[in-house]
Each structure stands twice: as structure tokens, then as C-alpha cells.
Image 1 (cartoon, rainbow, N blue to C red):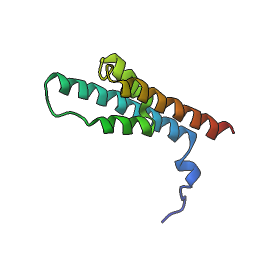
Image 2: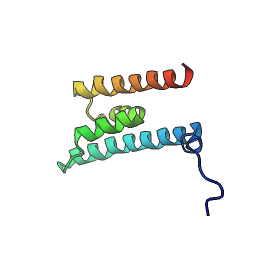
Image 3: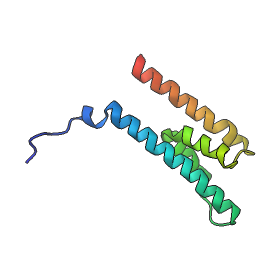
Length: 100
């Protein structure tokens, strides 16, 4: 039944990690777009906590790109400072993890 079991190294490969980062950053970009559209229509909004969670899960580049592309949340200090700080800390962690 299980002739070729999948190892943890296969699941957490560099290739899969890169795919994950691409997907989570696309999600981050899209949720900034969706939230901006909802803000224009006075509709129900995506909670700010969700935007920070997506950033913390590795989507910082996408959320920051979306923030400035759509001029969304750029007046809020917690986003202008918080999202880049989270992203920089994640990059430092990844560099440390892979190279030290």
C-alpha cells in the first residue's frame, strides 16, 4: 500500500518552501486589494489582525506591496512600521536558519 513513503525532508524541501512563500505573498497582496475595495464601498472589512497574521506567516512582501500599490493602510503607523519590521525579522530568521 505505502511502497514509497514520503519523508519529512520531502515535505519541507527548499522547493516547497519557496512555493509556500510565493503563495502566501500572493494571498497577502490580494487581501490588501480586497480590503481596499471593501473600504471604498463601506462594506464588511478584513480584520487588521488577519492582515498581520498573513504577514507573520511569511506574506510580508505581498502585503507591503499591496499596501503601497493600492494606497491602503498607508496612514496607519502600525502598518507602515509593523509590516516591514515583521518582514525584516522573518528574513533575518530565514537567513540564520539556512546559513548558521
